[in-house]
Image (cartoon, rainbow, N blue to C red; front, side, top):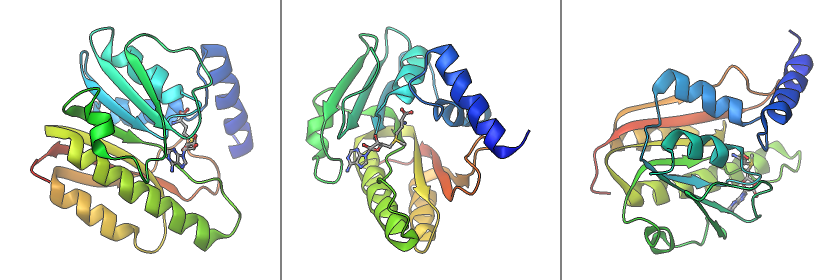
Length: 198
Ligand SMILES: C[S@@+](CC[C@H](N)C(=O)[O-])C[C@H]1O[C@@H](n2cnc3c(N)ncnc32)[C@H](O)[C@@H]1O
């Protein structure tokens, strides 16, 4: 299928399945490959608007789990009771604000991204700033053994962040989902088996 056709197909699939955005299919692909979720987990979702990752995570952790989402903007969909939402800026939000919901988390997700300006260097730099902050928030709130998944626009200095993740986790890698938009520079950084103590 041509790339544009594939994007449209995922847009319509998301609508039909009741998801707030087609980005859910990237999370689903990574989950199917790396088994991110389990029932009862506590999950952080940084940059969660409009809410498709919240919907997917809520389903995967079930009613006994907890999903805490943060974004500048409110979710655009109705969410089940195991989801809590905090409106805020991850660049300034202290970890204590998230520790109020749960002292430690099993999984930290970040799909946070800047509004793109078309100026590639500036977009990549802003994405790196957001993702580096999301990684630090995740590391300060994860349980030992926990996992992290964070999107970033690939560019200069991203390799340093990949090394940071490789040091902090037993397994660290960068992954590009097959369902990513044509020409997109986004990659997902994955850490599994958090060593703790950061
Ligand atoms: C690609 S969207 C996330 C899509 C979401 N994962 C979903 O599936 O519905 C990126 C989000 O990052 C958020 N964002 C950007 N900068 C942020 C910041 N400083 N603090 C919190 N959220 C931020 C944006 O508001 C936007 O909603």
